Image (cartoon, rainbow, N blue to C red; front, side, top):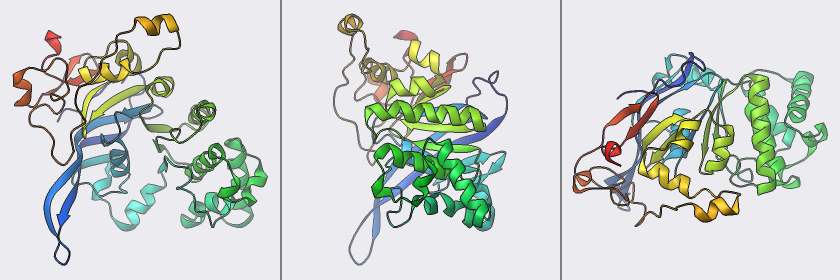
Length: 337
């Protein structure tokens, strides 16, 4: 599979390379004896690169495989096949202590700030636990590091003595960010970090992430379905549908000149704050329901809902190719749209 090499001029160093990554979950039946009767193709052969210091976003509808991709990249889920190279080392080949050492360089900010923090632990213990587990800091040094992290994410140091139930949703997510920063990672996977927050808080958290990226030299894999926020934070964007990438390019190219019909439909649903422009905009309404990953359509996965599909789309799998410089898509009809 071809891997995109876009924005090399932005930063030539590849920090993370995902090559034909697949994650299938078995479907089993039976009570005493479990037998596999199928599989859910949550991630089905995606390839891309993330350059050091950039924000690469994965977008798509709920159920398209974004979160599974992020967790499989971090080896929280063992991949079915494919490779994930972090600083030229294949994470899928690492086990035990070798993988544990690499985890210091890769952290995750989870989607739900209410479920991702242990309610029995104080905020200070939540942030400090990774430091102790990896032997980074203990005692007074750890306490000082916790206070510095709280200040860095916009919280008062006295939050170290509070518990998650004493914090608002936005404050909890800031604690989650501080925990992710505790080991000074190079890559952070942000799994829809703002979707569970009030709209008034979302912009604050995104601006915090941008500040931290500049201040600490972080690299983000940003997973989201809010395309307006993705445009604000991303350098490049990959669009997923039923476990596959259907389009990938830099942010401005994706938003100003979307090629794949699925990307165009997603962007048409983003509201525009100008009432006059909004009234004149043409919405693309997709027909039918999102197919199941356990029983995906033959040929092009999108052909059952595509407004420009022809009969051949139901039989031929479209080639993932570079339509124009640094702009990749999987659709055989783009020349004729």
